[in-house]
Length: 112
Length: 116
Image (tube, rainbow over all chains, first blue to last red; front, side, top):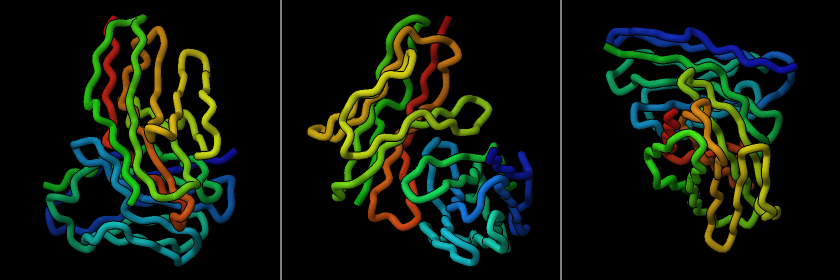
């Protein structure tokens, strides 16, 4: 069976510090991978998606970046965090386009 | 452009009441996919249903039912005989066939509170 792992579960970082959130998927190959952010207002905003290794599409210009160094690994990064980067970050995968997404358990990021 | 509107921000009902969560979408594509997800307090999103634009049949799964109407661009979700465990935030989402990567666009969510 397929599983998705996302860590850490919670993170408190000072403004200006770097960020690295990792997500891995097991039990499948060549998944589509996604990073979403959920701000306090609840809406889910798509940040990045990837259809293959090294292929990253950015949806919203910001100081975040994403990378896919391996087939089932998706990393969200920042060189310098802003207060506005606080939120709940969710990684997700799907088998192919237009299929349902499977979500990770999320990372609650607080930038202070 | 694609858009999903969930006009109900919060709904509060008493256990055993029926409740309907509204979802209205906008798309220019003739082929698209609609989804509902549940987000309990734990935070992880749980998939509930996926429908394609060519299948307008209503669906029932236990206490859950979905009413898809292309004429009004709506995909409403009804919980019959609600229970406290149904308390969560519910999201409606849309994916257009023309979207690379099959990305989902979510509505703002409806927070459902079921009181005993």
